[in-house]
Amino acid sequence: MNREFLKKTARTPALALLGLLVLLAINIGLAYAPIGQHLRLPVKLTICFGMAFTLMVSCMHLHRATGLLRLAAATGFAWLAIMIGLMLTDYFTRVPVPPPW
Image (cartoon, rainbow, N blue to C red):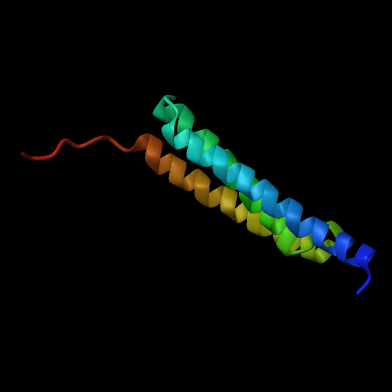
């Protein structure tokens, strides 16, 4: 194999891995950071979207895909947003119930 070809093909997965590791480090750092619960959830969900987007672009090769594949990926991303929105609706409208003891 040609060394230039190997460099060119290995760059995208390496950058994706580096990006995912950085987002993971931020996520772990947030677990120990003294910030409020109401601020922590949106930040962690933003990190989740960033991880999902990174995986979609790198694993599905969306940077050189056709329009139909990009449309399918955007639809999956939209469904993820809808599911997280429904989860947030449940989270913010739930009334805390004290234990019976």
